[in-house]
Length: 489
Image (cartoon, rainbow, N blue to C red):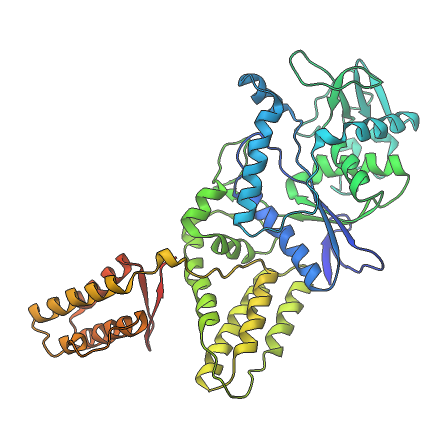
């Protein structure tokens, strides 16, 4: 299995000699609702975890919540609330949204505020090792003390510009030195420390949480590409300075960003599409398929026109799983498709190729069924491989299926309409002697009538049947050879 390591700038073989894979993924700062950019990142690392587990690895997955942050504090002060009143509902909402997307929950979701004692311990040791210094109530990390600083982002101190969250200050020995501890300001939450009341800087939390839950060296550290600098660069420097061990993480994985127009989707910009809103509009599996149809390291632009076709694509998968396999017959051999799936996933999680192999398998299953082969095992493997990508293949909810009575009533209306339009020869499909005892029989009769209407070039009447079936929850799909149907989802 090869994974692209941001540190080396190339794909490297991933192998685990002993013990579980220790994976840390940077989580959200819960000061407002999560958006599709968060969902895309979560799905990326969910698929990585699922594939590692599918490949036989044990994984310990830790993902933090940054519940102490300038934006959270500003919002709390503006709303005259405690910071916990701001973050707790948003954390619960995030978890609900991720559950809806079938993202596996991390084994541990630590809060930054829970690790203050560990942060203080780390900061004090960095001061003792002269990798950090105290200045007017704040504590800064001395970037010049870490000779590898800039290796992840391929920058040098001589040409660096302060990052988005770094303020140049006369209190610093170097403009790029970053805060480990900030002196308390009036009205802000604070904790006691050897340097006075204050709160931690942004970067120190991930070091403290990794040390607390995964140890001094981890296997995979993940996050969005926007975290490479300064967050992950700073995290490496302080972690390796604290432990004296390198590398802090064997692999650094970063997903591409989701754009809306020309800008990345961001809470600070305000160009957001909410997760719940998108799930309601398109479906959870459909959103997942859209994200996985692009490689995780590539940027992706949000486009309703591109997401909408995912509904039809997912239905092909679901329909394939619904097919009844012949009771007897030679079992369909799908070794080729499984091999292509694993080869794709071993190529730095090449999910576009993996997804393509699933649809090729669907085609093979459909042809195998027509050839009289047993397809039950192939369908089972299709489901298993799909679940590696996190698809649920959820069946249609019962309340979405029209009742038998409503279908009979609809058929009666069509029968009356056929007679009024002079199609007496077709109304025989709805004769009193025609069995009307299940959905399939009634719908198949309607499709036969519609096919004959199209042959007679009575397209308006045929289209009325299609539209009205759609209104009661039955969607038709015309192909050159036949018309298929499915219940709406």
